[in-house]
Length: 252
Image (cartoon, rainbow, N blue to C red; front, side, top):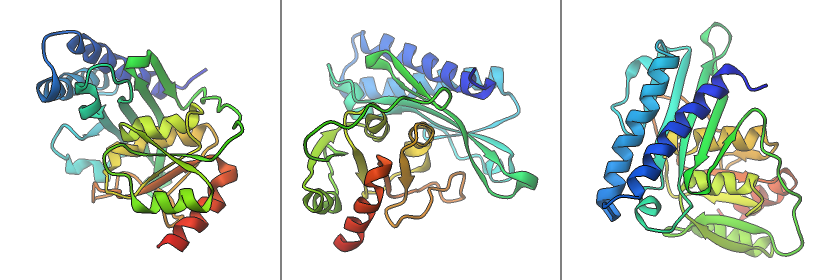
């Protein structure tokens, strides 16, 4: 059975998904729809977390950074609407809702992601850390590398060339990360700058599914750090990790 924290993460993600789908069926479009979605999804997530975990801190893209998070034992890292651009474009499904819990280590030293949910509202799916996603076997064909549809990093092209792979443009960061867990792509590379809330929940879901997750230099992804930025990452099938990181080093 999932832990209570996973159930809370999933409930918050589903609440945001519901309001986002409701707004998407209305009169707003484009940027106006995206702005309304950001605000409404933030309220939906916070309402659930405030009710279920009133003493925890929420660290969200859509709210001012609360400095208390740096001394807290439990911090929810949230992106209530990841992929605002895709959400505002009718018919696209590659956007997501991220809800992750970071918990401090023993005696407050260290810490890690301990529960998460990623909702894909347009597909009616919620992926969680427990039970983990079942990654489909990799089929025949070239290695598929998910990249930004608007800003694919040059290093991804170099990696694709080294692995005889192909680049697959997709929408939001969270969607690209969980696309590896869903078997749509074999890896996701990002080097264009992002923030902790862009990757916390999808990285937790990917890691729980047995995928490799790290920075582009191979170091661990660390969350609830004072600087909200976390500029690059790799999410991939574990059997590809060494080859991908070697190709990144060669490209750099």
